[in-house]
Amino acid sequence: MVYLYQTEKLKLFTEEGSIEFIRARDKIFAMLEKAGAIKSSHAMWGPDPWFSLAILDRMVEMNDLYEVTGTACAGQHRVFVRSGGNP
Picture 1 (cartoon, rainbow, N blue to C red):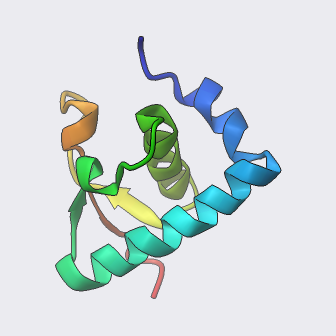
Picture 2 (cartoon, one colour):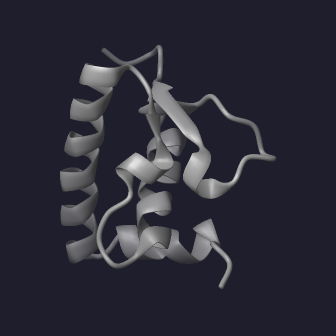
């Protein structure tokens, strides 16, 4: 199975997906507060790793996160920091 953001992104806009997004975002921000950067594997939880990646990708889209790693990096090894435009 291959991760497809455009497919997974649709789940973010359901009621359950929105609740999980907010919960995950708060957890990710707390981890970033302590560590300064996180690997996507540390931000992945629950039975659906593709949905966890979609949360990270959505946060990048919203300029909440900045991805430090390039496109050749495996999904679970991607590294993120808080975007400079946000407190």
